[in-house]
Amino acid sequence: MVTIIDEEVKEYLWATIDHEGFNDEDIDVLLDKVRAKLKVDIVFLKEWNISHSAFAYTHISSEVEGKELLGREIIISDEQLLEFQREFSDNTVVVRHSVDICDMKAESAMYYGVMSEDSIQGIIGVVDVKNKHHIWHKEERQALLWLGKTLEQVVNAHYTHRLVEE
Image (cartoon, rainbow, N blue to C red):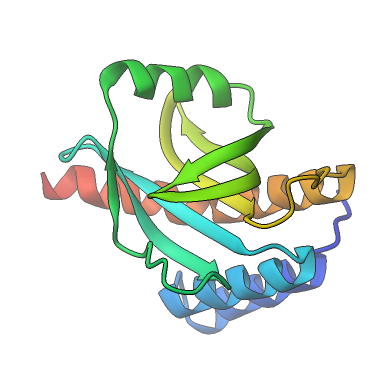
């Protein structure tokens, strides 16, 4: 798969080799570069915290002033969790218009769910806060899919670590 973020992903993967593993700073740099390349307002990674029954924003790149999302948790009901799992079960990109992101209205967003054995472990999102007429083109969807596949290992490692700690 060739995408518009191939160079950014390649740099990230080389950085993980240089650092002998996942590094939060490398993930943040990757999200910043993807946000700039896709010309969107926010790119985020939120991960499932089973002990809190919540998604927590663990990495974020944002141009939106005054909206601090990093570390915020969103409590999810069992029904909502099942809906997410159904929605993301086929490893595709999901598009939404007029969405709420922690008290912030966004005009358009697309998401990729990181799944493992029918269980959602994280969500990677790309958000256009200002442009209500944003049409997510095939190239952008492929870029998010590639970003999701790239960050799956990180999300899986974090999820496993949290399970072991509990």
